[in-house]
Image (cartoon, rainbow, N blue to C red; front, side):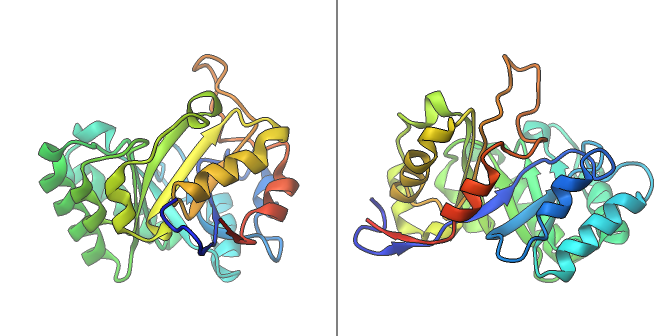
Amino acid sequence: MKAGGTTVRTGLGVYDFAHPLVAPSQWAELTRPGTPLDWVVLNVAAGPGVCPDPHCLEASGRLRNGGVRVLGHLDLAQGTRSLADLLGDARRHLDWYQVDGFLLERCPADRAALPEVRRLVTTLRALRDGAYIVLGHGCHPHPGYAENADQLVTFRGPWTEYRWSQVAEWTADYPADRFCHVVHGVPRGHLEEALRIARWQGAGTVYLTDRTDRGGQENPWETMPGHWDDIVSQVGTGVSE
């Protein structure tokens, strides 16, 4: 374990909830006092949408007023989108919803793409001072990416893969708050085990849901987990391993 013998604090990163108009109770639940949220992603329509959405503005405002960090969703499409397109989306997120930073989803993980990602992150931080940047690789990227973001998503996938996953050795050089694991299909009876894996591998932020992608036909992140109360009660307490 990367943090052997120490207390590892774990928080929640809420990845991709459905639109607040479709799921108002889910968004309201996020404002419940004591919920250990590290950040919540605002994804209006595969990004900020084409015009300001009052429902998203209200949901974002409630979270930010409660001290929760809200991130705008930027889809890098594995490096195929232009810098101009991405910055246009970023400006709309900032102008319309006053986001605190960005999740760079489908971020490339190879060394060759690192200079372009670095350029994008530098420009985003120039647009918003103190912008919190999460790189949504979904796997362990080249270690150089760790120097260019506040946090990396180093696992995104099903429980059947996560329970046998291995952490990259280079992550031991960084604290747990630099890494996030996002796992779907976690049975209620395995929630404690999933948290233990995350803490053992040194991930300070998690999102663990019992929802599944049903063979790639559904988005497992858009609906609140059925064991949400269990997650809230267990995450953020910190354990010594």
